[in-house]
Each structure stands twice: as structure tokens, then as C-alpha cells.
Length: 328
Image (cartoon, rainbow, N blue to C red):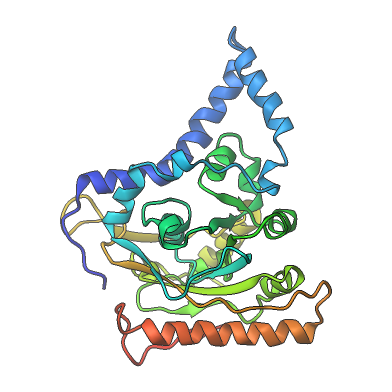
């Protein structure tokens, strides 16, 4: 069971504003946008909607990041809450592009967000000349306001056109993809290192098509910050999770952590160190039409590199020496 401590209220509020800001945009700003269309202020939402149409393809063309948003001080409160850090094992050359495998998904992907979507852990100083992107569900970029907020932090669509654009326009781009996808969130619970990877080979094919190097990463502590209720296969809740996934693109997970009061339960994550270890890049050849044999070969090399990365650092970051990655 993860340990808890008396919350720092500034850090806790800084952490809560992250998911709450998306809820505010979805449930408050969007209805307000529609409401204003029927008032004397109708030109304001009309201008925004017109601009939205003109800007529709921007998420698939590199997005529109904002160094100002990425450097907001509030991100340091999220960093310090756990705390979150990043460890570089090898330099990344700005002369290449990279696909970075993000493992594990966790429930809210705190490590990847803080390390690659903000400057709270000084990514640009740790990897000079490298521009990080984190890919997420494409339909998020169809939602007014939320799309702009995501792009400002360097988040891009996981669609094929968006990935192709990042990997083919200039060099020094690091595209993070959560290889296990949203289904891996169901495996997120303390002392569990289960990754969904054996059937997930599309990222290798894309890397070969662009000659991008593969970079394995593992975020220790990501699955330790919440407890999750396991819904057994065949149960009503398990069926509901899959129906929810069909409608919204991600799974409905029932989880809990600690509350504001010491010893209480709530939706705040446990205070556990989160460390993202960025491994050595795996060079790949540039093959426009790779065969399945080529994809399988480099997928196996990537899995082997990921395993080695985990084994080299696991005891340093809280895993017992006997713990192994469980790859499905």
C-alpha cells in the first residue's frame, strides 16, 4: 500500500486544477459559447467558431505550442506533490527525430505530462535542441477550447497525419506515444508492472517509414499513486467499461487515493516519487515500405531494450529485485 502524508494544500490545489480545468472548459465554457450566440454578444462566439474552422487542421500540422503555458509556475506544484523527476541516460541528437515509447500508461499519466508537456522538470535544459510532443486521442482536438489548451502544452493528435507531420518536418522532434494505449490503464495498480506491447507494433512500422529512432522510457511510480478496483471479466462493470470505451475512447476506471485530511480516502493521488527514465535511442533504418519481418525484428529489439532499462533501474526506484516486467 502506498504511503500517504499530510497534503500540502497549495500543491494539492495545483494538482487538482489540471483535471478540473478540462471539466471547466467542457461543462462551462462550451455551453457559454452556445448561449452567447443568442445574445447581443453573438459576434464573439461567431468569430471564435469561424477561426476554429480555419484552424481545424492545426492539431495535425504540429500543433501550436506555447512556451508561456509550458512554463506556468503551477506545474511546479504538480512536480513537487509527488515529486516528479526525469532521468537522462543518453543524449539525444537534434539531428534525428524520435518516437518515444511511454510506459506504463498509469491512470492519469502524471509523469509523461509533467516531464514532456511542461518545463517543470527542465526538459529543454536536459535535452537541448529537442522538441517534445505527447500524442493523445484525436477526438480531444475536436472540442473547442480544450484543443487549444492541449496544443499549447505540446500535445498532438495520435492520428497518422499528425504523426507523419511531426516526423517529417524538421529534426529534433521527440514524439511520445503511450504504447499500451488506454486499455493499459486497467492494469494500473500498485506493485503491478504489466505492459500491453506484444500486439502493439504500429509505432515500429511508423519509425521505420520515417527513419526515426526509437527511445524506450519507463516511469517508475506511475502505477503506485492510486488504488484501483478491479472489474472481473464478464461482470456488469467490466461490460460497462467497454461500452464507455466505445463511446468516449477511454475506459471508465474506478480508483481512489488519499483525501485532504490525513488518513482519509479521496481522489488525490498518494505521495509517491515518480521518475521517468529515458533510455538510449535505438537507431532504425529508413524503409518506406517495411515488411512484417522487419517490423517484428525491430519490435523485438525495442522490447529487449525496454526490459534492460527496467532491470537496470528497478531497485533504485522502489521495485524489488525479483520483480519483472509482465509483457502482454
